[in-house]
Amino acid sequence: MMVAGQDKGIMLLLLMGSLGRFDAVYFVDDSQRNIDNMVRAAKVTKTPLYIYRYTGVLPKVEALHKDKARLSAADAVSDATRTVMCLQVQSELCTYTHTSADPSK
Image (cartoon, rainbow, N blue to C red; front, side, top):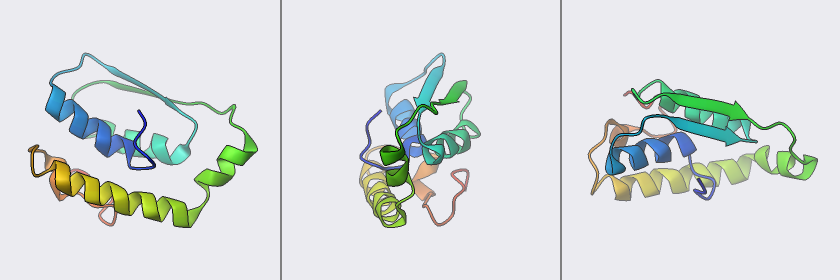
């Protein structure tokens, strides 16, 4: 799932909410941040999420994941995207922001 640096857990939950029921979701990613976001999302869905971290990542890519400014900008884009999507989709995630860090609120 390519979401331009946005919170993949939030985007998956919004996608699942708009498309219907899934039997299971398998998620593989090289970023610990994305893994953490999926783990958080897994706590608020009944759909089984199988989450795996790919660790054969190049050092150049790992450096991108450590760029705080890039991650902060991606969080802002994620919040703005979710705001627009929530105009069309009903979800408990519509009250979530990165500052709360708890999608169940």
